[in-house]
Amino acid sequence: MTSDATIKVDLCFHLRGEHIPVDHGYALYSALSRVLPLIHDDLQVGVRLIRGRYIGGGILDISPHSELILRLPAASLPPYLKLAGKSIEIFGQTLCIGVPKARGLIPSVALAAHLVSIRNGNDQARFETEMKNQMAALGVNGRITVGRRRTFEVHSKQVVGYSLMVSELTAGESIALQESGLGGRRKMGCGFFEPWEA
Image 1: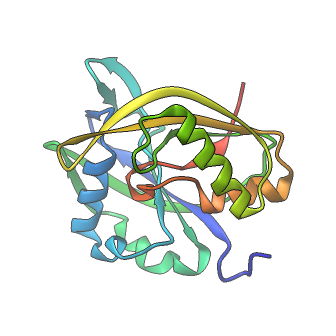
Image 2: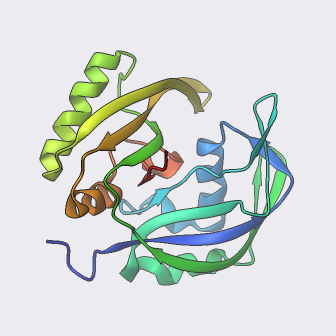
């Protein structure tokens, strides 16, 4: 059972800016590390990819609803609150980080992640097997649906990942999966699960 000290929440910051590339996970992590170095060694934090309005050419327009969201233990919030009021730069574009608010995780029978990656994950069958193994290690059952194959850049190299949905979850399994995530590169936007809406 998860203790109060390790219960995870989403720390959400409003963002202001113009536009960023769709493929911004590594750049976002690098920018956050420059402003708040402790994130580099924090094994408990996950970062959600920023959402915005797609305007073509691989570019997202930062909308009034765009947020920077970090998922981390509630007990670890205080140092991350220092991001409020800071500016980060992603591919030459400045994003201003606003006032934070914390949100509890919401159980859902189905969860989706925009991008999940594993080492040597080019083979979809191997990827699906690894996802099932990781879920079993968490004590999480559910039906896996592997979605679109995606590539993203890390250290100037192209890495393969997949969108993923896990359905038929109990409330406890849903929270466990959101708290732990699946796969690697969690600080670069991978393995970040949220309730799926049809």
